[in-house]
Image 1: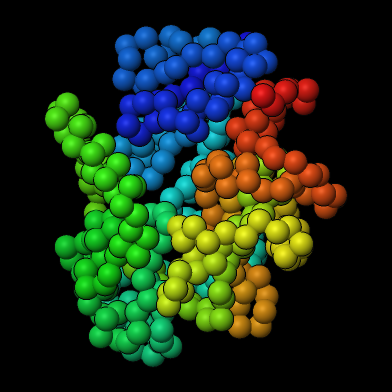
Image 2 (image 1 turned 60 degrees about the vertical axis):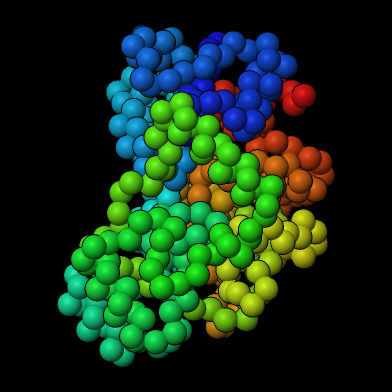
Length: 345
């Protein structure tokens, strides 16, 4: 048995990928590090039982993943994690909304326009505030609250003209400054400086968002969202509280792992969706609408692994609770390799 693991967005093998290697080594399963730019890449792919590519939000990864995964999975018949069914809509809130809404799953009401005139006409009678989002981005970076028609019109005009780069919505404070951490900032800037000195490209997001607009209904009185992560038929969950004087919770770092505080309706809904859509792994962000009903704001096949590891256990498909701490990579490998007796180090 041979597992191939593709490098991360920085050309390295980050701790998330190293965790796969640690588990495979512990179970004496052969694995190899891969780079799609290597001339022997496709010859090695032919020998694999599983190909792992944890691709992220950056534009380079988008174009690479959507090129190689369909060929490896569909044309060569090699198992992939994630497979296309799981990841084709990743980091695209419009695709996610269209997909889940088409199956009548509970989504936060959204309005998507591909035509500038229709968007401007709709905004005349819209109820404010509204949430404006770029279709890509994580940690609330591309999410803002617009309070009036004037702000909305400026955003619409910009989106159907010059466009907007990720993390640079004009005229609004960037949420990353609310989460400013000196150590992380120095680490990030230092890493970028080293990559620049080595002649590497440090511009992660080079494609502009343009020629569409996405508005989402603002749901007040949500002091937290609930992140439910489904891996196979296992459900992990925790609550993320909003930043001070802000409506955004993703990336806040304010997390409650108490499983007794989790609304079991959310677990049932997430399990149902993943089962019907045959997702290998999926994280769901739940809010409550004005009637107290669950509403999904977005989904993601990948996530921060330590947040799953910190959960006190998980629920199975029959809602039985299994106490313990588990790395998500462990269950990814169990399911993808069909090895229920795989051991966690």
